[in-house]
Length: 51
Image 1 (cartoon, rainbow, N blue to C red):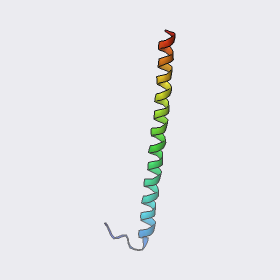
Image 2: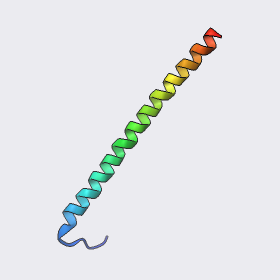
Image 3: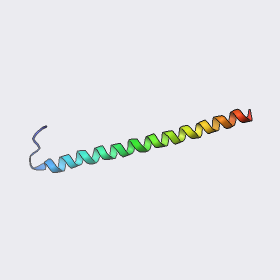
Image 4: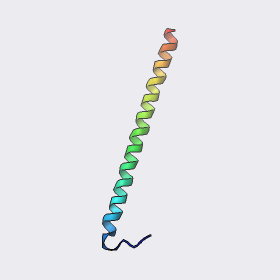
């Protein structure tokens, strides 16, 4: 690990916040993708049912 000097806490906090936000964004994206996939599947089933 590089020597960060007196700014170590600030730099590491910024990295942690960035990783946390990235994790939240990935989670939201995956959840929305699953919801869209379920909606599409339901629409396809409805279309098959109605011919």
